[in-house]
Image (cartoon, rainbow, N blue to C red):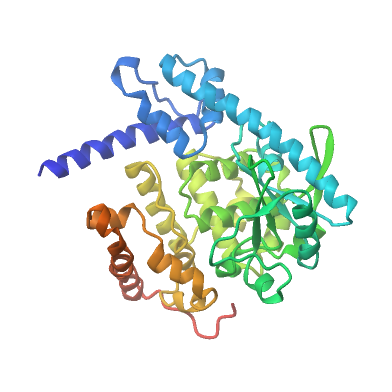
Length: 416
């Protein structure tokens, strides 16, 4: 009984903080919600929510722009995050320029993805969007050469045991989508992509070859940088957010900022791009639905027609919205892709793609949920590796059963 009361109080506290956070992420004047009096709330929980969702710089600028009187310690916390982030962002923007010049010297075409270019395209300001690393896209045939160029420049592989980084191996290139490299001074990472999503999400990712044909150039620190067109960027961000089940509001804010300048998006081109990629369209429809519900973004009629919200998308959006409001964030879980696909047997389509990765996810990766289910002393923590698969089986068997009972079975003969 005491535990349930504590949980309810904690949930209410999270709802208050997330409500304020969502209010500030919306366009000014969209909601009449009074800012709480300093004595009425503990600002530290709100600061933690800003940090978790990685939106502290944006919130700091929004508070200053609205002239809201906030607790001095909260403003100082957000100001420090803004200054730290701004310094890092401009540093990484210069590193991005240096890398693109390096690749050009070796005749390696490269596209900048997310990071500084996303900050400029969606926000118009490098300081408003947080990012900790750089993402570059190259052609797969240039991968071995690009890796050699970077390692000669001091970058180091940061492989996981299930991802040994073998750019010369065609099977490795076919199975994986990126190689992480760490700068010589260890101050940042570069993710070198040749695909835009993992092999497990292949049905949800864009065709990189077509992305190259639509690439554009933007100005970054008075330098021309090649990047994706807005339409490719929009769809790639939708797929990325869905892959992570929209666990961070930063990802949804990216979508909202692009939609707030919807006149710059070519909706007929988006319709054509998604006409033969139904799961890409579903990811975009989910993103638009969440942006409308959580951030009150006005969705153009053309977008609503091209990206309709089906019953499955509405159900999934409602679940993510309710989790965000109740817990302060949605659970990040890539099985959202399988839910969006609507196949309870979807696991079989992904099993065996990367056996080592699956083994790590099933047995070696231990999170707070497993520790909460069975608290163990330090000397017995090795038992969590046996508890995890049992916990996952229990957790997802109910979801699969519900999908079967709802009749959401895979369609026979459907192309993948």
